[in-house]
Image (cartoon, rainbow, N blue to C red; front, side, top):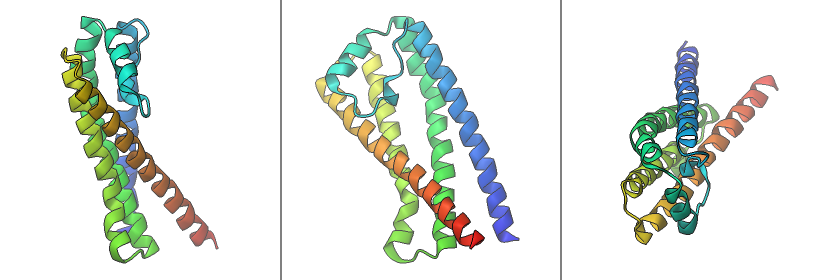
Length: 172
């Protein structure tokens, strides 16, 4: 009974995660429309400070304000949605696979590191969109961006790989 309840909870978290992803993509599209084609730079892996500076100049006051207030409001909630789904999924996989020791303890924190980097990246971009053109902040954005992508996509890989392994184990 406990496993069925756990899978139901993961299903609910997955639906929330996917709904927030769709809402975030919608808000990103609005930024692109308002800026005349300049997309969200948070979604570019390893973006350089030079490219950040170039992108910032492409946002007008309307697009910049929408990016700061509307897109980031959605993106902050999205971060909590994906970390909830990934962390609970990884924790379930760790338990079902019987992963013990340090690895079993640390694996569920991979998405948390990604979320913290995402929130720091968002904070830095919020400041940059407010008018700062600090090279240090642009480098910080780049570092947080890379950390976010590595840890969030590692979480996705663990969830997909773990689910595939559990399905294979169940079928054999």
